[in-house]
Image (cartoon, rainbow, N blue to C red):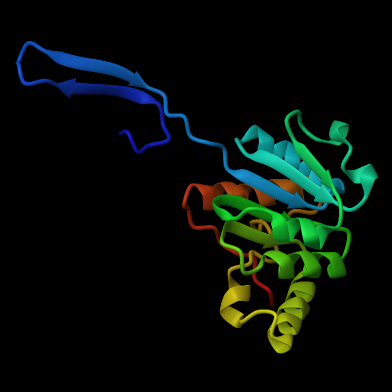
Length: 192
């Protein structure tokens, strides 16, 4: 019970049959942190949906117009700066989730290179199946990643729900984040 993230009622029997202690347990567990690299339409939609399901949101973009606080939920940390440097300095760990949804293939690949070898709970990159195959091939052939390192990347990002619109794409991404967070079977979209 004490290792759970769930609230609950806890009863402990004491040595004397007439004695027992009862407590209502409300665990204080830090929110997992979601680093969204790319503050465009998909990044904004992911931020809103992920904040509702309990993620602490950090948005990083190199364009000031896409890091304005009013674009994101209250409490979001927005950082404007060179993406690769900022991602490289970002902390890593079992409670860090990273979503790469920048404005283009080159930016996603650069951000991916900066965080690929960092331990995170989740690392996902947006893109078509074709783009993912090309990026994977380029990373492996150039020595920027082994096949095993690249295989930990959720790409194409999100669960395969047939998403077409930005809100649907964000829903598929956040659903995958929840699945990984709760240790479910986060199926990946096929690359071919």
